[in-house]
Image 1 (tube, rainbow, N blue to C red):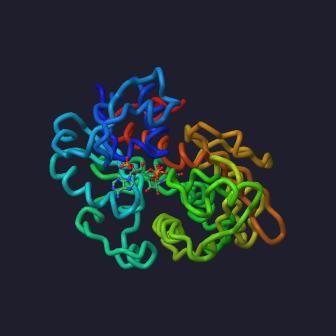
Image 2 (spheres, rainbow, N blue to C red):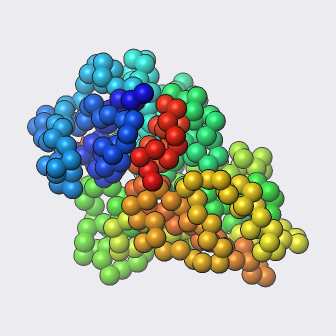
Length: 337
Ligand SMILES: NC(=O)c1ccc[n+]([C@@H]2O[C@H](COP(=O)([O-])OP(=O)(O)OC[C@H]3O[C@@H](n4cnc5c(N)ncnc54)[C@H](OP(=O)(O)O)[C@@H]3O)[C@@H](O)[C@H]2O)c1
C-alpha cells in the first residue's frame, strides 16, 4: 500500500534529501509540501537538484490539508517549532516523524536545561519513540510519533551500543566528532558562512553541546547503567558527513575478539551497518547513503571506534524514511538502497 507523505520544512536541507529519497520510494507518495512562506514556489526552484523530478508546489502551512491528504508528516523544522505542530497533527490522525530535537529527551528538565526553552507538549513527549531502528525497531513499528535521532547521536550511539550493553567498556567515555557544515542547516550564520568555515577546523560547544544528554539517555536506557559522554564536536570545512572517534576504557580482560564478537552479535544482520574491522572508513564512503561504517582497534588504554555517517541521510532524512518504512509495514530498506 502507498504511504501518503506530507513534509513541513520542505525548503530546508532535510527537505531536499527527504524529497530525493521519497520521490524514488516505490511505496510512498509525497502529497503536501509546507513552508511558512505564502510565495508558493515550485520545490524544484527552491532545490534545483530536484529539477526534472517533480513540479510540486510548496504550500503555506495548513494542518487541515495535511490531515485530508497524508498518513504521515515529516517535520524538518527547528526545535521548539516542531512541538507547535505535533499535537494538532496527532489529534487529526496523522502520524509524525519529527527530525528536530523536541521529542528526543524524556526528562522535561533536561530539555529546558539544554535547549533553553520550556517544553509545551509534555503529554506527547512521553509517547514519542526514539527513532533509531538498530535498537528500537519494534517500538517504532507501533509508534504514531517518532523522534528522529540527532546526527551526532546516531554516529556515537551506534558505535557504543553493543560495547556498553555487553559491559565490555566503561560507560564513561570520550566522543570526538567532526561534522560537515550542512549539520547546521541552511540558514546563514557567522560561524558557518564560507570564509569563516573554509580552511579551518574548530571545536565548538565543548562539554555543552545539546546532543550530549540524548546520547547519555539512550545508552543508559539500553545498558541500565548511568552513562557519561565527554563530547567534543568539531566543525570541518566540508559539506556533509560526520566522523566520530570514540575512546572507551575497556573492562578487564577485553580484547580485540571480544569487541569484534559484540559487533557481530548485534549488527551482523543490520542492513545499514557495515562492520569494517581495522579499516577506518572515510565520510566519502557513506556520502549519499544510509550506511554507518564502524571500525575499531584495541590499545592498552582504550577501545577506539570510528563511526562515519552522512549527517543528512543516516543522520536525518534516510533514517526518517527508515522509520516511516517500519511504521507503515514496508521493508526497512525500501527506497534506501
Ligand atoms: N542538518 C542536519 O544535518 C540535521 C541532522 C539531523 C537533524 N536535524 C534537525 O532537523 C531539522 C531541520 O534541519 P535542516 O538542516 O533541514 O534545517 P534548515 O535547512 O535550516 O531548514 C529548516 C526549515 O524549517 C523551516 N522553518 C524554520 N523556522 C521555522 C519555524 N519557526 N516554524 C516552522 N518552520 C520553520 C524553514 O522553512 P520555511 O522558511 O520555508 O518555512 C527551513 O527551510 C532541525 O531541527 C535540525 O536540528 C538536522
